[in-house]
Length: 434
Ligand code: UD1
Image 1 (cartoon, rainbow, N blue to C red):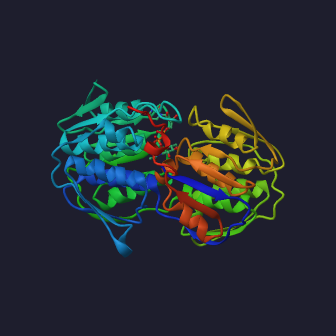
Image 2: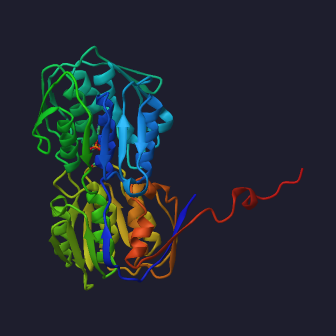
Image 3: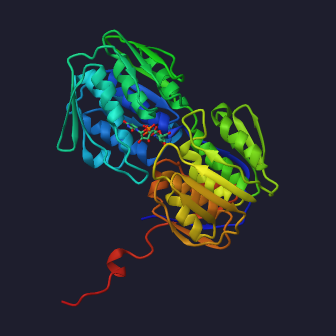
């Protein structure tokens, strides 16, 4: 298992470029299931979740071509025939977003069999809202042996009010509705930019969608969709992660290739914390002169403060003078990074959904464990200012969603390197004589 070794103390200086959004690329790849024709996606990040989706689609009979060389961020997916409209537990358990194939499969093939995702590190994460939405569209749903089976001759448009805002739930049902007969009106939808990006792609494929990016989405069903070419939006969470990394190190970092309007709430918050943040075109420059001030955050659905930035913000809060209260409203168990930050010297108390961070605490290097994707990012950020050499284990979590993060950070001055297993298990284990 790979580890990161990070020596703290260097300010990040220069320009770093963000990749395409993983959370936009995943539903876009699933959308290719809706047509027999090829769908070409540009700006697809090279991260593990994309590779998992490639394997998932290929197992169903899709042709998935990944670009090489200069075209390495392009992928063309052709789902002419789908021999096996099924997503196995083996793949779904490693990536919950695999459930995004449920809606497109039942809409296109009339049948789908997708494993239930089960629990994950940051909470229960059920898919009941996906299921309810598809049932409203007329799908018959059966749950057996850990799988959801959905079937429908043809889905029918309906009115759907989500009990709770769900990003992939909105995307899943929106994709299904594109091929339904009649109009679907979805209320209480997620307004995330990734939902709007998916609707852009679907529109290029011939879908008729209004209101994506707002809480009410209308989809007028069509009988067939066609191929299209689409460029994935920049990753706002990767951009935010670099911005906080630049800020915590007291650096002067230009984060290029991002969409600053998707980062509004974060940039405003960083201004309150005492950072100088300026944006121009597709770049955000963050300049820190130290003296960070504590400020509270509460995670909310977009356009509120993203839960996917909470862990990184917590690392920053350890370096701000005063008390920051961090309230996690989206997931019930998303503070696993806090204990690891405490091991590095942070003063953090967890009270249910609230974390109380008292700063500023000097951080010192330790051996720490990454527990999930964004938790890993917060440990990398903390390590960049810790005294000494931090070793972060289980960085496969970070590889799920960050493209070559160590190379990007190194290019702006961080001392970070990746190492493999120090000792092969066979040698590390005690020898047992026969
Ligand atoms: C997506 C993002 C993830 C982000 C999250 C919240 C992708 C691939 N992932 O995840 O990075 O952290 O949005 O912004 O886009 N819920 C239910 N029933 C459901 C679905 C969700 O109760 O059927 C609950 C969840 O447990 C959670 C809340 O709704 O408490 C929001 O989850 P949701 O928006 O669905 O998260 P994801 O789409 O899985």
